[in-house]
Image (cartoon, one colour):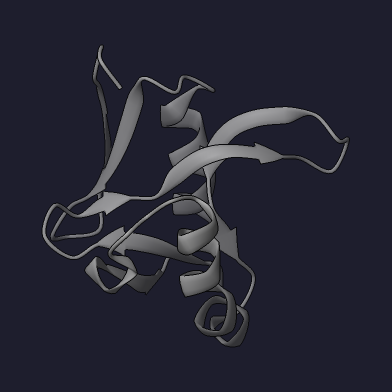
Length: 98
């Protein structure tokens, strides 16, 4: 199962510009294929992205379907943020000044 970063206070799922398997840039959900990789790489990844408080983010497991829905809901639009609901639902909200 994939693992993503979720903000502890806001429940935002971390999304950013990434490179796909075809070396094309897209805006999507950052994930790791397993928990060990996520634990080893998450803090360095956040630091590289300029996040000053990596401890505010936690690693969370999503099933493959929910991960795909994250990227569908983002629709390659960097003005959108994703949020993980209490019952596991994924919602996207557009923010004009991102």
